[in-house]
Length: 305
Image (cartoon, rainbow, N blue to C red):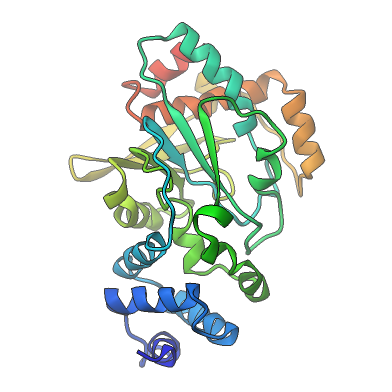
């Protein structure tokens, strides 16, 4: 099908727009990744697709199309952490601190099946300008339980769209689906949502690729928690919401940044205070729960301390 027909399908307007069939989405995304459409056509389609609002079925088809281009690397006993690619400005990254915490945890809890954490990296994508995981993964020894994968290697075609996405400067369908593509064939996954309607959407879109997908109300589109929040899991075909209060775990973190720099983040990682360490432990406690290593968040927290 001519690519212009896809633009017309999503960019005609309220009365003329229609949802695309699975094969149409796959064909459109395939043409985009193969650069069989011009940058102008790609931009027009992505904006129209976003404004129309992609259906769950369209998002699932987009994931299928992207996975057709991927190189996979199996990491057993793992959970994929769905970090966003569009930059972080209000909080530091915590994952470089996980190494020592995980090491100490397994030294004390040999009965717990080891868990590997999967993190993907790439160049900064829109819609905001800030730090990415890519800025830190080469700076630190992350230990034996954290695996990082560069999307420029395992899905180069999507990485090569970075310049076009920067020209648009807007969120597109790729921002929605790119965080949990299953590069390591992990059993478990966690992503984040701020708006509740996206919880069901994320679980539905990614459920075919993991044994279990959890959603947490994290910071800036990434599964790292810095404040009171909640998480969602699908249990017996129902999405169950669970709230947590950091003070219940002795955590009193209240730092706020307008636009944290990479150097500030490195300084926090290199000289972590007690609250940052406790925050890091709490996030690991969530991952242990989401990957069924423990029966409750309280159990994970007690074992970590």
